Length: 116
Image (cartoon, rainbow, N blue to C red; front, side):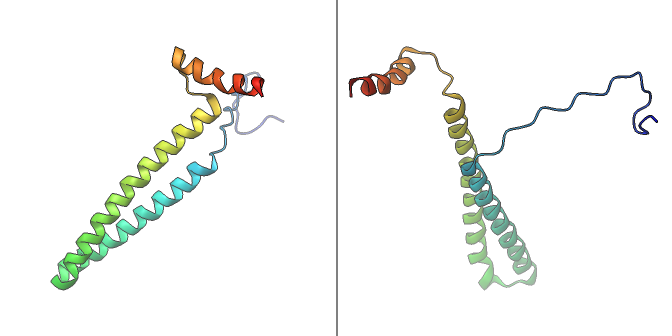
């Protein structure tokens, strides 16, 4: 009996998508920190909005400062993710440069090991 989800038996089935590599731990930790910073920013933004609507000016100014610190932390977290991904990719695949400086830097540890 033919599969119900595929139209005919003579048509080839699509190939499966290649598996993706697991996310390195430092990138996962950076993502968690960024999401926590974003959550803090969002909550303080909502509380700031409620303080503005209620006219509670004594709470409004400190909440604006906390929200701006949360935005700064969120931007820091996004930069942390991108830098961590770049470092992990370079560790896994190399820097991708083929210059005299890169070749000398790659050869330097080998010569030190041979000399020892």
